Image 1 (cartoon, rainbow, N blue to C red):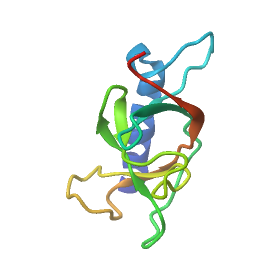
Image 2: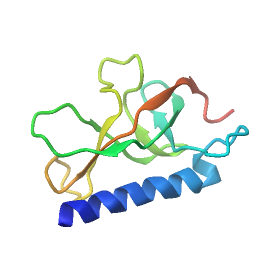
Image 3: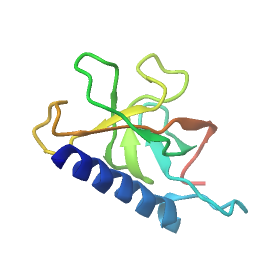
Length: 118
C-alpha cells in the first residue's frame, strides 16, 4: 500500500510538471509533456509518462532527480551508454540508494534533444 501511494505521488508530480509551462514545451501541442534535462549532453528532451514499474533488484534503472533548467534532470540521454531507455528511479525515501522505498517508472525521452535555453 505504501509503495502504491509513493508511486501515485511521483506520478502526480509528473502530471504537475506536464501542466507547468516552465517545464513543458507547448509548440502548438495541446498535451505538453514533461521535459527532462540531460546534464551530460546539455540538451533537454520531451517525454511521456507511460507506466509505474516494480522494483527489481539488479534491473537497469536510471536516476532522475529535481534540478536543471527544466525542473528534472539526469546524467545520460539517448545515444549515451548509460541511458536505459527511460526506466527511471527517484530517491523518494532520501537515503541515496535504490531500494523498495523509491519510485520506479517508465518515461522514455523523445528526440530530438533541444537547447532548453533557446
